[in-house]
Image 1 (cartoon, rainbow, N blue to C red):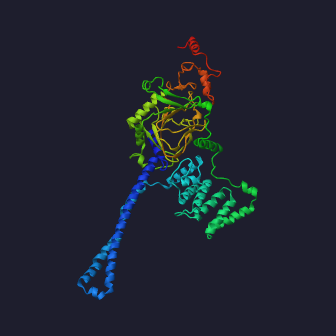
Image 2: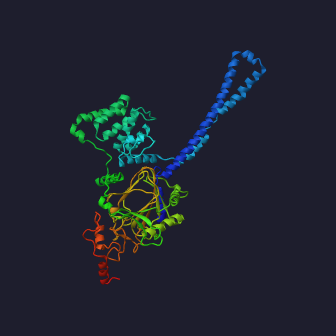
Image 3: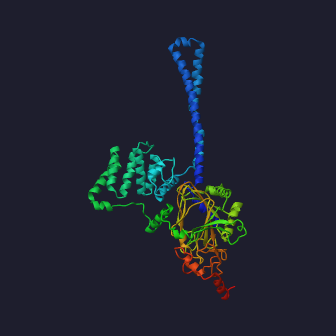
Length: 569
């Protein structure tokens, strides 16, 4: 029952705008409709051509006939043809004119409409674009014209597009972004762009109220006056003008500066603080990667303690962070394997196609080992590399992030205030996370760790691994992480959450000094000789330990002699 509910939960939390897969389907849906529309236009043009040809022929004939009616009708053939035209041919023309060539197009449109995005999807896409504006500190003009320093694009936003983005922010009570987008729409109109259904009055109406909500009465009054210059009969603007003038007369300058404030900050201070840190890390700011820390991170060929599969062909391992230890494994999957996983993760007929969509930053699917031999091979590869038992792990979760797709800061493990987080599974807490990147991302999409100030960029075919729990079983709160919004391109990832059960004698510990595996049954690292006491102390500090400093363990031979003299075997 749990797994059925899990599948249901994941697929009910879908949205159109966040998934490149869904957006691709929409592209082909629109392409099909364009083809159908062109067929309709050709049919209409063909019908009009026939009518025009018939009209031109009759125009010449009737002109000649009416110039000499007696002479024309004096010929018996002309008299017959006139009667035949009026009795038969005009009826045929009537039938041609009444023929509705739009039936095929309207029928196709009705069929395809079930795949159309909803108002909620449109609102979500607008909010995703605004989210990119904040996270990457982009300018509305740069996004609108496609001339951002972060990327270049031929896609531009029209006046109507900017107005719609502002309207969505307005409906959310986000008056700060309402102002930004409405001003952009107004600027584009002033440069000579011709809008579609939007006019300056509509823009100024939203703009004046949004700046008023932010406490800027003088600007609100200015925009209202501009509106009334365009439409002096606008009732709401007339009332607002009187109200704004009354409020300004009532207040002094000090009161004006203290009035209002932006309404978008409804979250508590700790949320805003973390959100700010999250956005900074996504922009590559505030990273705590010091030169000293960088000097302690290494790349190596890794065979997992001479595992038979990797003795001859070890995997490429790279340290991404020291504490907590985050490692990346390069070239873990082939392109063919990644494409197979993506194909398996696409929505399929049956239960999942019946479930409605709701907002979520990405579209997810869960793949069990039974789904395909490739999934089974991936699970086995994870077990071989990490040394952990994946039989108690969750199924492989595949996620597709479209433009603006993100995941807010979170922990992968269940906290103490969530005692029943994974009770249904009966396999304990999530001890470790395996995150596999299955696509290159043109811009954005990094995985950031907000507590430690780390950022891991997506690299196709590589996997990032870390432990969520300390050896004691307590959660490692340093592993709080988030997925940054995708700025350009799309991001495919898969997650494997490994649980505690089955790992009692399997968890691998790494020496922070040399990166090799530790044997917890011995009191020192078998490779660099440092004591477990020193290693444990280093693991609890924020700054990396430097080899050669005070506290290094005694000579390796002396440690061995002492260890066995104490009766260990």
